[in-house]
Image 1: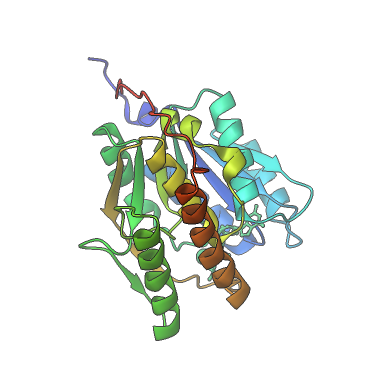
Image 2 (image 1 turned 60 degrees about the horizontal axis):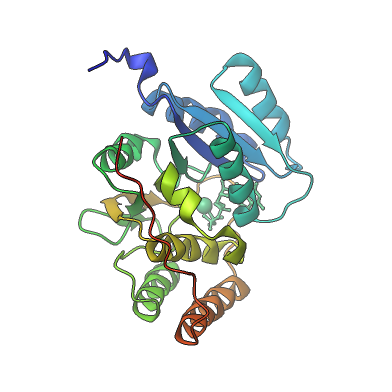
Length: 260
Ligand SMILES: Nc1nc2c(ncn2[C@@H]2O[C@H](COP(=O)(O)OP(=O)(O)OP(=O)(O)O)[C@@H](O)[C@H]2O)c(=O)[nH]1
Ligand SMILES: [Mg+2]
């Protein structure tokens, strides 16, 4: 049994944080993330935000060796940013990878709870609004219906167990990330979260939910739109359709061994 100093705790864990115009949130959220997971690496993936988030990230990186930055030339949506960030983390040897939003919707206080479930053997942990103890704050009726309805729809159509399939606060064991058939991902915003949990599940990952209370962004503007919702519904139906016609992802069981 090795002694952990607090500073080493969560060594090998990478937190991938995609940003687009989060200059008002980035400094604070970075401190909070590294306070929650002191030995972790924080990778900011910025799509050339016009508000200077990328330069701010560079400054943070120059002040703290745990912070890294990946600059992307164009805004290509959350999914693409995540795929690139996951690749960087895996190439660097990450044992665990966390994904979360930079707008304080995903409270960094929950990070140790997500990591505890991973350390307990889960391959993928979902910070879940729709499991006992979870919830949402500051959302109107419409947004609640869309989010809950979207999760329920995907859950039924794709026959998945988790209750929150649209949330983006997740922790991955390396083997689970490696098992996802990334070439099948449509890479959109909202639907990316459904697809990755679906693909991990079909690859044999053990998925667990940990309750979180989700807070709406206070700074910046919301990007939710009708077209995003329609895209999500269509993609979910397409995934099931492909499966029924024998064109689903191959059931490559992952062998994690839970060596942890
Ligand atoms: N790199 C990158 N990050 C993005 C992009 N779109 C969104 N993000 C980031 O992804 C995270 C989630 O995006 P949000 O805009 O909060 O999406 P949301 O939570 O569905 O919508 P609201 O919070 O209601 O605006 C935030 O950290 C954003 O800054 C993108 O195209 N590229
Ligand atoms: Mg948000």
